[in-house]
Picture 1 (spheres, rainbow, N blue to C red):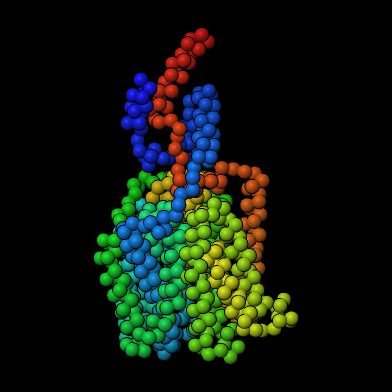
Picture 2 (tube, rainbow, N blue to C red):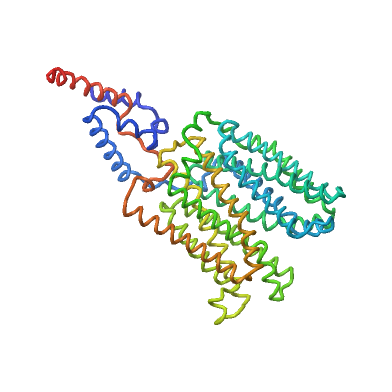
Length: 515
């Protein structure tokens, strides 16, 4: 009977999560068989897409519905991110002075700072490639242990008397610490994707807040501990915290591993051959450049306005605080917004406006002159707009990778994480170098104007790319049901095989009649 057949069909049909398939996984079945079968399959695909678009309902946000495991995992990742960036900036108040006593010039001391970002830029693709083999959890633990141990070793460097040996070990230990940071930061992206698949951008925004807090609180913590215990105490404290965090992390984070065969389906070459990924990578570099070029240039500029070190520190704190506050907000918006290009382009344009207000630009200086309120307002706009630009980029690359055929598996996630870290570190490395050179030779207003022009040009290129793609539509970025929502075939595998066998049986008489 029909009731019994419906009941048997329901018993034979797997549960919904087992029936979900992505475009890249289901596409080959639509281009196989005879021409009649291909036509039938294409019509079936179109009908399925129309059904999903008309019948799908927006899923409610689960930000307030995390499980206990998700909450503990988020706390662990947030604490690790905070300690990581705190250890990166903790040496800013006292290392240049200590290094100068050893005979190290200011230029070499600056290279010690920027070498950290260079090593992350160079090693992130490597860790993204090997992560499916090693597993995210092992890579995270190993990176935490290496970075924590190198922090402790860095604290005993003042015991070295010879300048050459001191300089070599500064670069060597700093490079090893950056390798550890690159390992666990790449693995942290995988935990975000696997543990919070429906709130990727929002959770990344929370981690960016922890990053901003670590960067802004690091110098204050470092100066306080240095005043109590000398050069070594800040590094001993942070290194010990990172090592003691490893057992907690082992219990809180799940084991995520992937088969090595996944690396055959995703690679950095395939990823960056996608035009959208290339443009988004340029946006990440420019946004990170906008953030980092202020490190060596803003303090000298504000000092000319007769500000004390205390007031300069408050302005830096305001800038970092706005970035940290708006990062989770823009991350939540990115999870709701389907078109991430609007957010990225708007962020670049607003960054250009804020950069023109710094100095201010010679185009405005003749009519307004140098004013502190212009600098503060410009920094506030930059802090908000850089977060707006960066928050949707990781999820946007994920969507582009899947929609261009890369499978939704661990190898794809790890390569996207490595690529994002690589692009961000490239901007973090080039920003201080380019900003310092321009400020030294042309002044801070010209430097900010050049950075504003770079942001605006990137926004124009991205706008032109989106416009050209809309005029030549492709199935690349138009899923109305998001990256997380895969597609479910209308027929089960068993019914599809029965339909195929019936069609093959009906084709046999036709073949004999042709003979």
